[in-house]
Image (cartoon, rainbow, N blue to C red; front, side, top):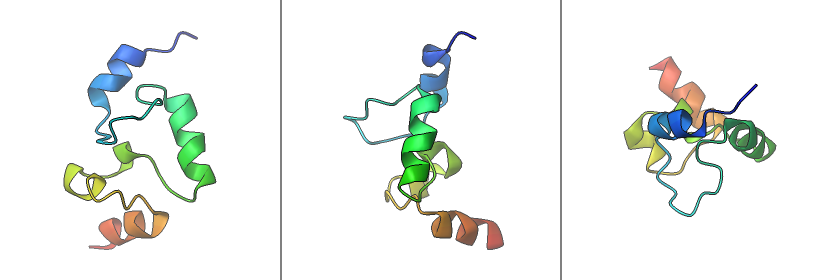
Length: 64
Protein backbone atom coordinates (compact mmCIF):
# COMPACT_ATOMS: atom_id res chain seq x y z
CA UNK A 1 0.00 0.00 0.00
CA UNK A 2 1.31 3.41 -0.93
CA UNK A 3 1.62 6.07 1.78
CA UNK A 4 -0.17 9.28 0.88
CA UNK A 5 2.12 11.67 2.75
CA UNK A 6 0.92 14.76 0.87
CA UNK A 7 -2.73 14.03 1.73
CA UNK A 8 -1.85 13.21 5.34
CA UNK A 9 0.08 16.49 5.70
CA UNK A 10 -2.98 18.46 4.59
CA UNK A 11 -4.95 16.96 7.48
CA UNK A 12 -2.15 17.13 10.04
CA UNK A 13 -2.68 19.86 12.64
CA UNK A 14 0.67 19.36 14.38
CA UNK A 15 2.26 22.72 15.19
CA UNK A 16 5.65 21.28 16.17
CA UNK A 17 7.68 22.61 13.25
CA UNK A 18 10.82 20.46 13.33
CA UNK A 19 8.67 17.29 13.33
CA UNK A 20 10.02 14.75 10.88
CA UNK A 21 6.90 12.57 11.18
CA UNK A 22 4.34 14.94 9.63
CA UNK A 23 2.31 13.04 7.09
CA UNK A 24 3.86 9.74 8.17
CA UNK A 25 1.10 8.41 10.40
CA UNK A 26 2.73 4.97 10.64
CA UNK A 27 5.71 6.67 12.37
CA UNK A 28 3.79 9.32 14.30
CA UNK A 29 1.27 7.09 16.05
CA UNK A 30 3.73 4.55 17.51
CA UNK A 31 6.07 7.39 18.53
CA UNK A 32 3.38 9.11 20.59
CA UNK A 33 1.93 5.89 21.98
CA UNK A 34 5.40 4.93 23.25
CA UNK A 35 5.40 8.23 25.16
CA UNK A 36 1.93 7.61 26.60
CA UNK A 37 0.44 10.26 24.32
CA UNK A 38 -1.78 10.55 21.28
CA UNK A 39 -0.80 12.44 18.11
CA UNK A 40 -1.91 15.99 17.38
CA UNK A 41 -4.70 14.85 15.06
CA UNK A 42 -6.58 13.47 18.07
CA UNK A 43 -6.98 16.96 19.55
CA UNK A 44 -8.70 20.18 18.52
CA UNK A 45 -6.31 22.93 17.40
CA UNK A 46 -6.56 24.95 20.63
CA UNK A 47 -5.57 21.94 22.75
CA UNK A 48 -2.91 20.72 20.32
CA UNK A 49 -1.10 24.05 20.63
CA UNK A 50 -0.56 23.41 24.34
CA UNK A 51 1.43 20.26 23.49
CA UNK A 52 -0.52 18.39 26.20
CA UNK A 53 -1.19 15.32 24.14
CA UNK A 54 -1.63 13.03 27.10
CA UNK A 55 -4.26 10.33 27.11
CA UNK A 56 -5.58 11.93 30.30
CA UNK A 57 -6.21 15.21 28.42
CA UNK A 58 -7.91 13.30 25.59
CA UNK A 59 -10.27 11.66 28.08
CA UNK A 60 -11.01 15.02 29.75
CA UNK A 61 -12.03 16.46 26.39
CA UNK A 62 -14.50 13.67 25.82
CA UNK A 63 -16.06 13.83 29.29
CA UNK A 64 -17.23 17.41 28.83
